[in-house]
Amino acid sequence: MKSLKNRKKDYALYSSVRYDDIRDMLDVAADKYGDKTAVSYRNSPKDKDSVKVSFEEMRKSVAALATELIAADLRGKKVGIIGENSIGWIYSYFAVTSMGAIAVQIEKEYPAPDMA
Image (tube, rainbow, N blue to C red; front, side, top):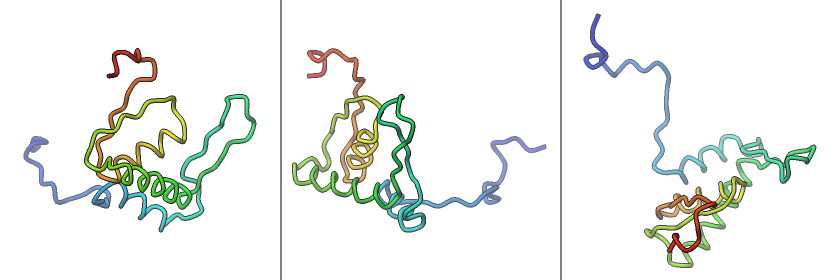
């Protein structure tokens, strides 16, 4: 039996798609899945129904936020993202990374004076 190191890599077990960046991945997913649910969440754990966000809605929201970040001259810079897990956090991360900036994830419990 050959060692794992010496096995040929041209026999893929599954097909994969290579994306240029996260914006490209989101565009392809929105084109392919459109109105299907990309993310669902509850505003509160007590909520009975969840809010559903389609792939197309996600693409539009991320693009709008990325446009605002570009207008704020943040392309290519480090952008801090702080907050609880939420749809806004997802949009922020995708927007920052899709417009060519570096997302710096900051723990929400980190003391404010130490963030500077």
